[in-house]
Image 1 (cartoon, rainbow, N blue to C red):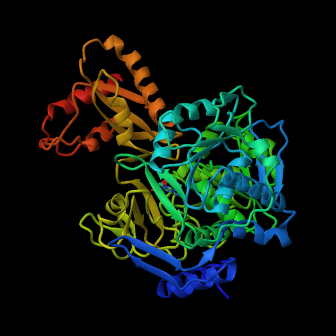
Image 2 (image 1 turned 90 degrees about the horizontal axis):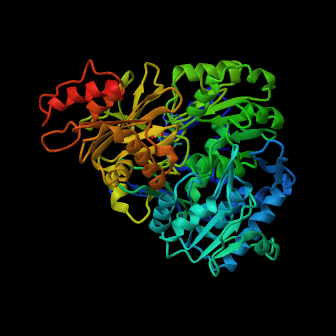
Image 3 (image 1 turned 30 degrees about the vertical axis):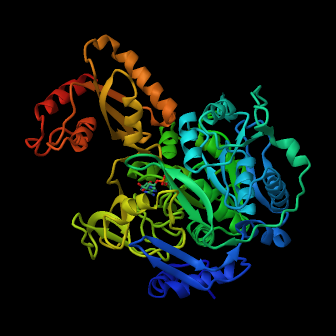
Length: 637
Ligand code: PRX
């Protein structure tokens, strides 16, 4: 019997010890007992972090949709698989059963085939949070096409870059999206992107908002009529354990976003196993993760992890503030949600609205509260615990990344005692290490440093699409024989982990990773800009917000500054998306630089955070005098 469902702390420690001392036996048992394989593996794990190369369940054959759908049909066919809650609360929710999901995925898969999509082809999905988003993801997986979901809030430029990087043949999109009281012209944005994407031969368009849109002849087709004629039976493509399942882009400190490649078997096993335990999902529960499927949280914990466990997973199209800030609680009450998984930024935004609205709703169905995406501050943790969980639902502060595929450090609810702001203990199979700056592992408790993982886990991303060298340099070069996360962490006196934040130039704004380099590149495109540097600064709701220091080519007229601020933010919005807009812009005569010409962001960060008492040694700068100037003019910004 494997440790598939961890029920108490002793069992956690037993499973953990086994997963570290005999990882191959441990994962062999988990994988054997709980999934459907067309052929079993020849070896459980082969790895070499110096290349880096990681292979899980080598030689195994499977299709992930058989695990997420088909195998549940006899026992759970009439159970709701996807519970869709529309943007407009007046519109009826949809309960899509496993049977119906099977039919809809198969039909969609057959349409993809008719359009010439084959195993290994890349399909870009740019669709809002409607059932067709999950269905298109699963339809790709059914036929072995590699999906690349792009969050529907990204701009045309961001979309085209991602389509071209992965060389996608097809785009799936919608006529538009609802977002609170607004509608978004998704097809218009897609059309603009496609002007730069000659490789996209066909576009399937889902009707959602009934907008008048442009359909390009020979390229664009409405999805609905194609589905009518498609069969609801589609034989699944038999995939190799290590065949890519999807690409998902994440921001890096420098350069292009990185197309993280996740493969089939290890990803399936790990997301299913973590879902079961980190949320303690049991059969009649209704689970709701508020993320968008455009992010890894949605891939792993709205689609694959829950469905592999035969769960009911809620998909919400709207925003927490529409029609008012009680919307989340209205949905919890209406659907009797048992597990609720959201981001600290949403918690802070809701906390700001007070508790009056919450009191209107019955939240007694809640059993587990999750948090993900950024460190949760103490105040938000307590507010969540007191007002939403009523001090009876454990908070699962789960730390992980796009690259890790699944949850890595987390309490197991009702098993691990929680501690505010701590992600607590490594999940089973995860071997974290805290490293000092010289590459030495800090052993024992009460240590703080850089967080690495020293042994492979099944859902580690295998590469960056088209750039294995970058994968190696980013994650496996700083520390020997370790995966480097980019985060800082501490281990307290009892061995609990607390994530302290990024140690590189990635800034997390409202739970979204933003690299400074692409934002600076966008700003520098403005003809008036000579140079720019972006740093994060603390923000009550967003966690961090962006502060831009910008040097103009001709600093002359300060009366133009407001106009320039608008233009610069518009440029960022066009190149990346509104989430990357700057909260503050300070025009400066220069930026503090080292003698080798590198911008000293450390100093800029302190000024942005209003923490100028302790700037450290600035005498080695090329231009130390600029620091005081920036501080003085910051006060006026
Ligand atoms: O800095 C960590 C932060 O989010 C980063 C990963 O972002 P992304 O790839 O977009 O994935 C987000 C959802 C899994 C991490 O490097 N992060 C994520 N969860 C936490 C967190 N920081 C602190 N506590 C967390 N629970």
